[in-house]
Length: 142
Image (cartoon, rainbow, N blue to C red):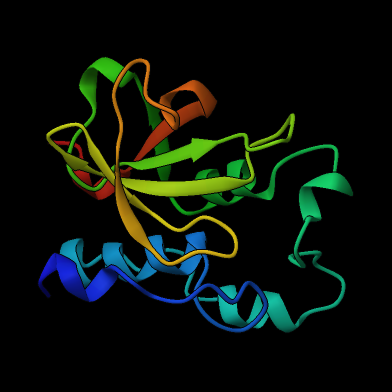
């Protein structure tokens, strides 16, 4: 799909597009990686807190748990590649936002209440200041 197909999606945390579904769709469409195919079911399961502001009610980030379960391994910033997942702490002590690295110091993500978009990602940029870690799917290691 052209990158434009991932840009401009309206935000709807509980039933539509959010940072995770934007990353999920991109990874599936561009790299053939099916990140957490059970995510839609997780959002319906009341015992798994995925509701907006979940990070205020948890001690740990389910993003970190999920990345490990889904076969992702942490990579250093100096080794970022197209399709690596970026995790951020936005007004939170634990990672609560994700995006996908596109190369050329750019990332795809979707902030709460906004449309999915491409933003800069380099040292000193707004998102870089909130960066927690990067992870790559095991299938992408050569």
